[in-house]
Image (tube, rainbow, N blue to C red; front, side, top):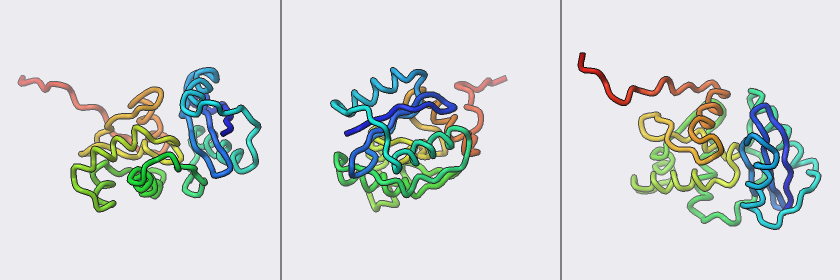
Amino acid sequence: MNYHVFDTAHGFCGIAWNGSGIARFQLPTTSAEATERSILRRVPGAERRTPPPDVLKVIEAATHYFAGERIDFTDVPLNLDAQEEFFRRIYEALRKVGWGRTTTYGALAKELGAEPQAAKDVGIAMSRNPVPLIIPCHRCLAAGGKSGGFSAPGGVDAKLRMLALEGIDLGPKPPAQASLF
């Protein structure tokens, strides 16, 4: 496995790959060192390499994405061999949710013909997504169009920034308690 760290308008990203495709993507952090630590924690033994042309195209696309350009990652070859079959099906369905669109955990579960309780499994798959952005887990929302969680650096705020890049505004958060007067 090989990796590379690169700078974007939102911070430093990382990417890991082998001959089968992209296996890991690290969303922006504040430093190259933090990104490198995160990649190596998830892909122990990976070696820093100069990316081949196909990986350079993904890096260029990610850089353009974080600069606010409309980018489609659906054709990026991925290596998801380490993922369980149901998660791979979830990721495949989510890759079809294009720029500026969202879905919900429940809608994805239903699309896959799973029981309503499988929405929780979809949420787990999102939290374990090895290639966020390429598999656009930021476009998967909780019921009612609420942001839901986000396990990437920056948490839900990072998710909301990515959605904003795509023109999606989930609006102001409702007050925790309404006044009676």
